[in-house]
Length: 401
Image 1: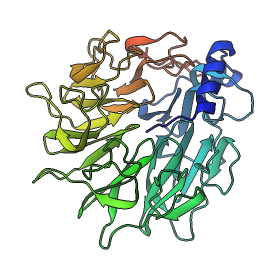
Image 2: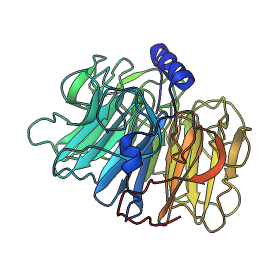
Image 3: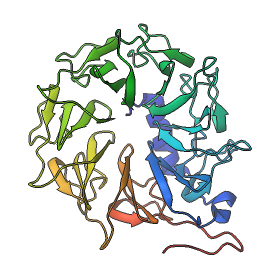
């Protein structure tokens, strides 16, 4: 999902060192929502979620990615309400490194960092509240995917991407950045039904197979090589393997096929889950514990998590506790997340180095917490899941714990 530039790393370090753990006015007034979160997404050092008709975000705000308005460089360690345009109710969210996008009825909106045009609104100015994506006439997005600094969407008219294109992640045949959606040059007969966006690469599932494009430096395109690809190339999956779900990290891609999960790309931190650290240029099966079959997977920067029944497993980088196993040692095969008693996650989201999950009416996060992205009211890293805290608005009763 995420390839950071030097300037953005510098900004992150400075803010982590000097920015107060501010709980803004919006945070103090945010309600303990009457409905549980139905989706949660995670970016670099921020998190967002959907609850009822409202959208909430928490963590770092310094590029406007929380969608609360204002230009102040702040962070909030509890959820705040996104200031959506009148009548806009999001039904799906995606998060890139420093930007967020959502679908509302026939329109898509994005907010946050816009250095490369990743918001798709025609310019390169950051947006602190949702701005409408300038889609071509007649193009209505039904699904979105956000990479590091690029965004893609599926519509009946085809697949489109916008934002950074230095490594050809937009799939339009060139390397020029785009501030509005440009159509992906798909092979004849290929129509994508699902997308996943990584650091600087993108992948899609079609009836004709799975294809990837963009940066191929570590084999993350799955075509057997390491060359960048400016248009989609077919993933060389094992015979009989047809992916129904995809996820992508910085230099890694994973997919579910039946009861098996496969990963390919960089493996220096064990993020392929195969028991070693050798990179793989084509899909290789994840070494899961006996009886484990993932039904949902999500990739962070250099780690992956998956849900199997009532249990959640993670593998790869664990430098901030993002694997949720109680420690900070990395894992080259899936390890069990130590969830609280009775907590079984049904939805997951992996960010740079933090993970979040939904269990019934409750939302939990774990891992890196430098800017409050875990939503627990503090900025201390957590190696096990902790519950997201919603502030109570005047006259609105709290629901949940």
